[in-house]
Length: 88
Image (cartoon, rainbow, N blue to C red; front, side):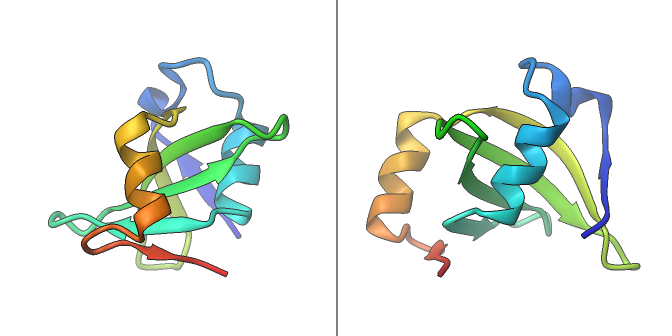
């Protein structure tokens, strides 16, 4: 998986390796109305992260947001969310 980053993806001091791990092992993904996605996965220490990204035409991912996961997204992930899905 090829991942590109906007500088804003690092605004919350989340390491690139943690973002990649969370994306590779995410357990929840929800599409947004603008064509982007929100994924929830764990960093290398087991803490949940929320990652927002777009899939580019070449299949690579463009990450523009990463931060410790907020409670509202953890709750949505646990419920499956209105439009979200738990991933296996």
